[in-house]
Image: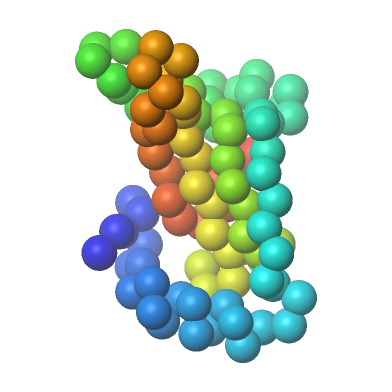
Length: 99
């Protein structure tokens, strides 16, 4: 089970049941990057940064489900695509990160 820092994350089955019960929360969006305000702040950049083979990588791209800050009504998946081998590294799965 995945657990975001400081949060108790429900199982995927529980999350899907609650999510499907909510009207208007069934679509997702894809974001190539973040807004300049989010990208310019150290704390928000750090929340999206992972280390791969000793290199710090910021995962600006993300998938977005839901529009609420409630854990059971939103999900974000931040990732980085390695251009060398086309692998995908997931940096965050959980609630909306700070902006």
